Length: 178
Image (tube, rainbow, N blue to C red; front, side):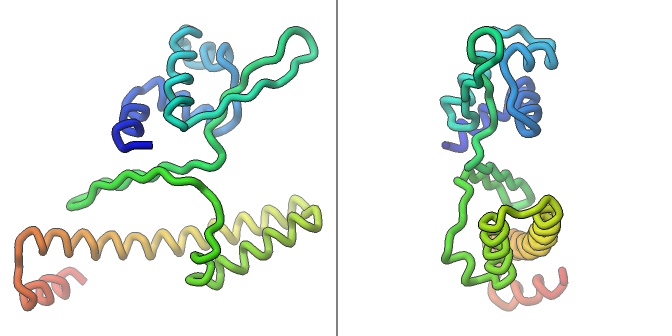
């Protein structure tokens, strides 16, 4: 998905509201229409745009009475990350999954993945999954702190490079901000 497509999708308030609702649970058109107080035709148009952009999926669920109902949900394998800051503008859309090469860099992450696989094999209890989710959230917090430091450093370097400051001035500038 291109940056233009992502921004186009997120640039519309109704689509953002739809995505917010879909992030909680799959929903069908008339349900979204009623919650948002927007016509069904408009909701369908927004959903189809997002489906064609690769942001949402649609599945049919058989109903007890009547014909199957079409449910929409955010794609399970997609994550969009937007970073905007001084000397920083970056939007990434990527597919979720486990890259074995990444596990080599983080022993904690490797332990978490192995624990997850073990829980899946054993049929895992709610308590085990809840505990693992807490571990994952703690690891994400640590990784986000590392990302903040790296973003700060790259932002400062971009600034300094933009100013074409010589090496001695870069060192002086860097230590002034620590």
